[in-house]
Image (cartoon, rainbow, N blue to C red; front, side):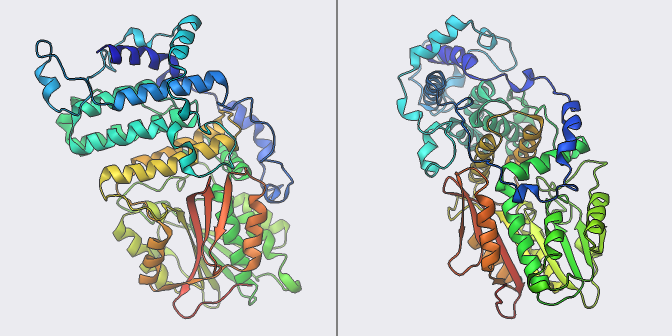
Length: 548
């Protein structure tokens, strides 16, 4: 029992301000700064500006300082104690509950719903004594925690990722109905979780919220009611509840500082422009993606600079398909929905007029209401939406796309790599945590550790993916098989598309890399050597054509 009492006191000293202790920041500051994010006036500045995003010292926010390293060691010690088997209980003091499972660590003294001394803020002297009392116990956990990207693969910082070491066993306990172990792990997570702080604290917060949402379905409403789940409400709204000006500013800023969406968008735009250059015909782009208009100014501008002085398409039509089109029985994919009042159409139409390009924008609730016009070149962009749909909905969406007989299909999705989990809910949860970790860690680097409104909004939206229990995270090969089964064959990116993407990637942190296939097919985006996403081109099965 003494081990758990000491853990409780240590936990109170090691976490940032907890989720429910944080104040709600005002949106006025973000709105007042909106003038700097007018993508209409400076539509492709983030692609062409010589911004040294990957340079500069990160020492001021790095957690690689002695105090932070000691704190990391202290957390590692608590995690190790939490996951270690408990000592055999004394026959005279054990309760019947303690014998329910030999693998369950003894619950902490205080419960998450009860105030205790462990939740009180400690004095600086006490904080220092706790940290230095454990500072040398886990030197190996310091690893590369807090360093600027560019380091080795995931294994180089695996020991510092304590959030997953708690979340994954907790998910397994929930799935197995081991409520005592789940309760204990939930409590420890509640003490460490915070939507601010480093990537571990933020991952713990998002993972805790996801587990709380999954609990009733996993163990039943009655059993779930007996589990005391720590408060885990995210103070930042998701996309659909954001203020429109902040929403737009966040999207643009994210493209400026991270290639997460910017690189696949650049690859797609270059491929579409190359396809349109083959023959001067009206161009129709069906957007079933997550760009909310930010992707398209660059495409429109490139259509006015056709190679060899060729004329641009006589007209361009953009059909934006609603967020529910690819997932009618599951929640909309993260980043796919926009808040009420946000409409990029007027800005994009004005920009197209300024460059003498005829543009029309239509919206469709589903692919069923998308119509084509004879003689136009049809391109369908499926970007980061299908991966969050169920298997049947994926197949049905691809069947509809194939029936439209497009000239080109762009498919961009998150990439779980070649690893295969055990097919359980806990295994799927672990795969989603892995991708969410890469998002949170890379976003910390992208924003140089600054905890601003834009970053919080993006991370709140990304965090919803951890609660997605319906869809299965897959790797590139699984998608290749699915596209082939739907009647498509893979096309190849041209040299210009690959070089454009490679040039763009140099503007970001050195932890990012891209790896095009030897055949010029799908291009993979990686963070610290681990897969994040891929972008690929497809045509109705009739022979592979190389885009030039």
